[in-house]
Image (cartoon, rainbow over all chains, first blue to last red):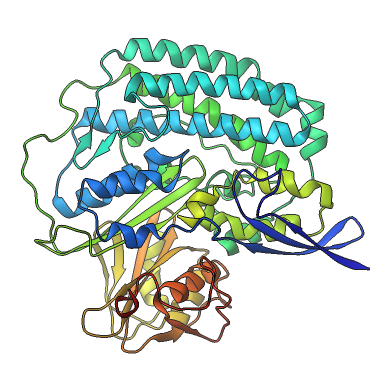
Length: 360
Length: 134
């Protein structure tokens, strides 16, 4: 006999409002329907009444975790319409902020995932490490979230003492390599709780258009940092971890390995930070009529901005953003089908969903 | 030779790609969105997004973007009215994207059901981004 179970929009397993209507046969989920939009803010419309400075502050609020990715992608698109090119030092600082944000996002997610696995000690440890990452972000930007680092033609704040930041990064890396990475990759608790759970096949990941670590956990080897490099990524050496099993375990493993790769990129960028200006101050610019599209690889995958402007206008004619979770979330339906009801909180958390991004 | 070079030929189009604003655009009067979606599926390209624009006089423009090996392709369609054929049956990734455009602009995607609304409550279409309902 089938019965329906609504999960959300407000549920202990969810960080933000979202609703999953589940149809179960016994303990097994046979169908699932997703409902989003509980926090819809219509930011694309709001952007049409913001100038080129205000719109950056607005779009920084799309997401509380990957805010830097949003402003950077937006600025890259606007730079395409103004002809401004950020100086090399700004490109490196953008890369550093991107990777610190990835570390912040992945440790936050690791904590939430640990909690849902019933691994409470690990949850506390992940959040302690996340605090250390946020301390680094604060040391650079002055802010723990919403860093206000990006502007058209560069960044707002310099990294005056990269050696000091490097020491902080190395301390965090050492602790992550000692705890989070081995525990998530080798612990029996984590393996038994996650292996074979919430499988997303390679074919479905491609069909649904899943992006980021979730796609890479299903064998889709795509990473915009590698495929279409931006900022200073072309000068960085790093690997793109890919797994093929498509289950929660693979998604855990990909993110754990990405933590190490982010630390590797940070070490390179901080060691090679080129001298010079951090923005094109004083360089006059004006928007040309047209549309510019820009992409970045955020912690949850590809973010894309399409910005249209009319020459002489104060405001964008159109601003469209497709966030990573928006592309990935429809795949949750396939992940939970055939799963045990008790596993659905862990499965939906395993994609590291951002409902704020989805609703924007 | 990159993977996107064969696509115009597969679509039966002789026009070359035009690189502009970070995108490889294929501009031709003989583009058909369902034929494009089918070819993209064959090539294992990924639908990235569809951006809708309301045109100043009347109608809409829809820019479809696919990614293939890191190259972003663009196909632009001008709608004289407010409808276009859906590609949802050929490309599952279009599901929420088409529904959201239907929410915001009241554009009809022929051959599929777009309601209930994806992001908003209520049943008023085009309330957010369509000029005449602002």
